[in-house]
Amino acid sequence: MKSKWIYIGLNLILINTANLHAEVYQWKDSSGRSHFSDQPVDDQGQSLTPNTSNTSPNKNHSPDHKMAQDDPAAAKITGGTQPSGESMPDAATVQPSEQKSTVTSTLQDSLQQKFKPDSAISRATLSVVAIETHMGSGSGFFISDQGHIITNKHVIRPMASKSSEENAQKLKDEADTLARAEAEIAQEKQELATYKTKLDDFARSLAGMTKGGARDLSQSDYDSYQKNYAKRLQKFQKYQQDYNTHKKNYDKIQSDLNMSNSLANVATQFKVFLKDNTKLSAKLLAISKKQDLALLQINGVKTIALNFYHQPLNQGMRVYAVGSPLGMRDAMTSGIITRLDANFVTTDAQILPGNSGGPLVTEEGLVIGVNTLKFAENVNGAGFGLAIPVSEIQKEFKSYLSSLAVSN
Image 1 (tube, helix red, strand yellow):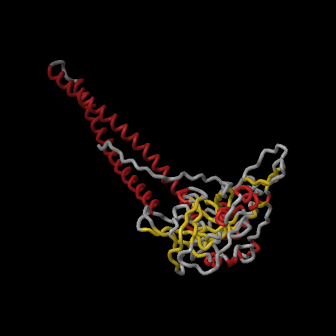
Image 2: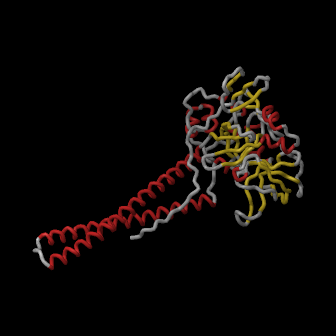
Image 3: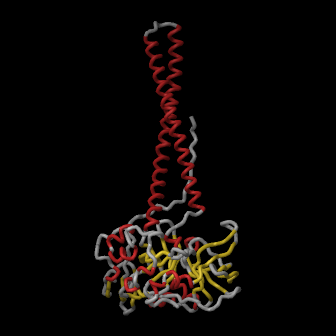
């Protein structure tokens, strides 16, 4: 029987399925200066005003996949309790008036005062957010002063990647290993049962023998067989214990992965982190059917919108990619426009995992595209970044944004 187990290591994130609801609180310090946070501040002579427009009337906040059921407005937008890329309606099916929110607090002054940007590029970073989902993370940026965020569709609806396919293959290999081990356990269990039956027969035979040389020789053989049986049984029990441990771990990883995939496909609320790491909750408004784009919104806040660049683009223009590459929030890479076509703006600025959904901006801080992927011969090699032109944002989400204070 085999005694060596095959171990696999999967970098899987165990997902917390708790509700992602967040509230914005506005308060003043002893000097009368306004501050904002997503947590209440102990009242020690300070004025604390909760942002009631962003607080659910239901104190028992529901999980993401039930959001539309508990929120009639959300149900009207998403068309059900389990929206997806296929079931989300076109932007034209929702009237702009249905998306308007009562602005009760502002993030503009807070971020401006905290970071005091001294250039167009540093000001642009105030509008970029990190987005966390059930399957990973990405970036986005504000395109209106009412909390509208543009990101990639694949950020909120993750597609199968090379790493996820490798993990799936590892899980399949582990399942095959467990199946072989289970068959070996069943076979060894049967052989041990047969061995024990023969030992019992041998013991009964010894009991009927008279004392003498023949009995002593048989007793010696029996003792040897009994010792071998005990060793084999002990080894079998250890092997079975290891199998049960690995099977339990495998079942948990598989269950967590299935749950994460399921939640990722129906989630309508997402964690959003501002430049100062303030955590808020954004609601999914629409998913583009043609482009790798999605539209989110943080309700009840006044936000800093990035303006679009509408002049002709030229090769060699200096550009900056802002986002959360490799999980490092509020980071920037730079380069030039290397190629232009109808579908993408190509740049040699690094577009790394986590940059997806962030803006590609000019030196004046104007958005020319939405970073979407890296084009390279291999994942670790040098390559080019691709960004979706801003004109596609206006085409895809016109009905949502036409009556709002959207960047132009």
